[in-house]
Image (cartoon, rainbow, N blue to C red; front, side, top):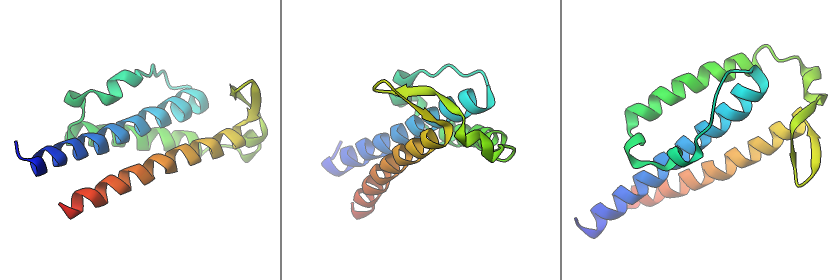
Length: 123
């Protein structure tokens, strides 16, 4: 395997693993917490190369779209002021605050994905 080929393979693996990680994150916190969809997250499997196929990611994204529609479209804005079931470092927060936290987390990883995508575009 050439150096460029190896770098491309590693880059695609990073992109796909990060994408699957974000999908698991959104499924857990939107699907399970806001909609009540049964979901048991297996974070370790988010980084298993055999699950990182394009088809698998597209299937996961289709499921995710349905979850987000169920969670966000009918959401009463008053729910944003409710207490979240999550707390971090011993601090409780509202659902709205937690959604802002998830937004930041998601954007952090989108930045990583975009960075790796630009690296791959150069090769």
